[in-house]
Image (cartoon, rainbow, N blue to C red; front, side, top):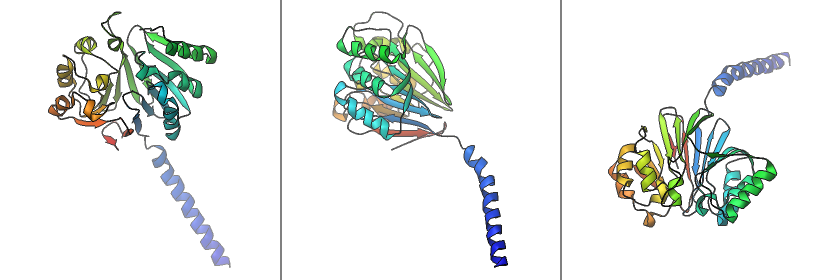
Length: 270
């Protein structure tokens, strides 16, 4: 009996020793950046998480608002530190009021371009009721999100031919990697962005659902993306050939979500 007790005590001691030896290694392992580009048809909504800090870029259509909320809950989202609405088109802000109402949101960041619509009114109503900080950008904004550096690039002009060129463009630096989320940027906004000293891009959320404009080829050549995601169906994309010409792997978030993760050196996706 005595030897059995000694044996149990010895095993307990070894287990305790291993726990304290292994625990620092586990705690020092950095969490990977998580990116989910939701498949909501021809609409944008992108979730980014780093060290439990979170961003949602755009909120899809009103018709998919409940689906988006379920997708966010499926990836265990309880709070959004930032909700970025790139521009006020229905396929980018349609579900915004529902998300703002259903989740805790730290700060709402919007384009300075305002449209007097029921969608905008619904968003403002929830913002007022929940006293959410609401910023309409007139100049570029940079901040840290976990281990990421986020820069929101604003349009230079106050007036464009169409709403799309009022889009906010988001650049994210993640260790050695760079991600670019280009909203619905078209010819004029891409012309402005071509003048910026952008790095080569590892992940590119393709501008305007893969529609082509006179500056598409020059812009794709400039950023030379390794991985490109188009929020549209393959049959409706117009820039796949341009992207593949630059050696980019092209994926489509239309009927399915694209899940990506990164350690700051390499992107994994499924």
